[in-house]
Image (tube, rainbow, N blue to C red):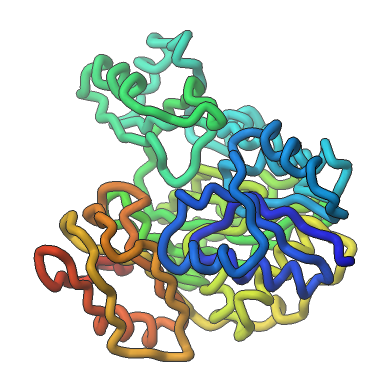
Length: 416
């Protein structure tokens, strides 16, 4: 009987690819999930593999369920920020392979700030029960605006920019207006200087203590919704800020003491400098980044997920040589509609083997307007740039208010 690898929840595109990767490594995948969190292709993919409905926000609930089974477990992992600490704790409790325990402190964004000033813009970390108003006001006087964000969430949950001219009462109101799940430590917050510039991300991994930067992704949003991502992006970055970004990422990973992990580190860059604004340590980037890597390196998405599992669970295994090839320019686009409506159907006019397409929402679901938040996606399309853009131009989104044009971001504009 093959041993099992426990997968706590899944990314939007990752269910099938992760399960295939687990099998290629000689194990059987088992998903612990809350099915109510999924729709579309993601839900259908989960259902193709062994899966169980469990409260994945509770380490006790997951352990109690697993201890009722007669499984031989090889490892526990996740591809979600919100479950990283739980996956580590569960692997430790079961005495099996898991994500690097050195990742645990860095679920809290304040931990990166504590490593040194070079790893974060000026910041104030605090609890809602003890708000340092004087420190926050001092920060606001020094910068045109600040960003207020929860310290243990991902995907921009709860983050909001405040201009220096806005009254402190607006900040206090924001702190008390959000409902953040308890497992994401809703009382812990950070006020950080808002850095102007272009948003990019460093994609890579650390294996046996050695950091490898695979490259940088360019990022674009529609309002508050992540939309366009392009890789590799180094050719579009200023030479000085690229060098600064590379240096800071390597120095950060060295400072963390993490030995084996993928990372997706967000930076703001200008003509000369780079500023780390959010270090997502322990996972590959979300959205369609895994598919984008596959297109860039000429492999399958399952190949990419095998490599992630090697680094994070089986670091004694050798990495594939495809990482050494020169990547082609690929993109991944999260698309939606410009106004809220009920989705009736999505009809692709162009079908191509050169692209990856994942539907996130089911027919009959309300699609928020793009720009509202990071849950406004109807779907994700990834692959080589020309093919993806043609697919997006041809999409037909039928809603209760008629056929609406697809809405997404491009490097220099929004696509409609």
